[in-house]
Amino acid sequence: MQLIQSLDVLEKKIISGKAKGLEGALQIGIALEKIKENNMYLAAGSKTFEQYVENTHGFSRSSAYNFINVARYFGPLLLADPSLQTVDPSRLVKLLPLITEVNKEELLHSAAQMPDARGFDNLIRSLQKKVCTDDPHEHDFVPINIEQCSVCGLRRKVKV
Image (cartoon, rainbow, N blue to C red):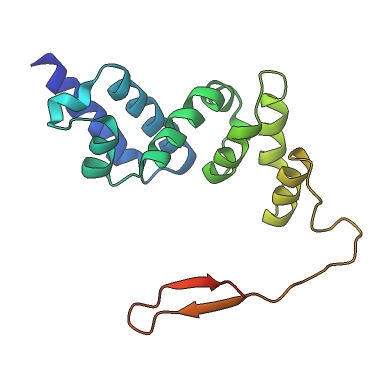
């Protein structure tokens, strides 16, 4: 009975977190991690954590783990420094593959202080050792063909 009540409380946190931006993303990540660690999804009738998050909350598997990892790796720093709480959660997801214990705080400050999306994307590209879009170079654009389904509008690239 205690497990079901705890699951109910955590599910309410997830629902309310969907409308709260970064604070909500952290709330969702913490709740999902507890549900996963304690196998509480079984009490909801799901066989797997992935099935639970998809059926109950409409999150894909990767979204659920992104919430968990953002809360785990960035949560304590974000909660300790109010100036960082304006960061877009999607930026934090992009930083996940790049973080180490050494650079975590620096990356977080960069994400908070970078005002434009293109600048942030170039920061990510430079950390990945890729050429940034605003580095001086001659752009070599190649044409790509795209076809679209006349019934549903689905688009895909066409190999030429």
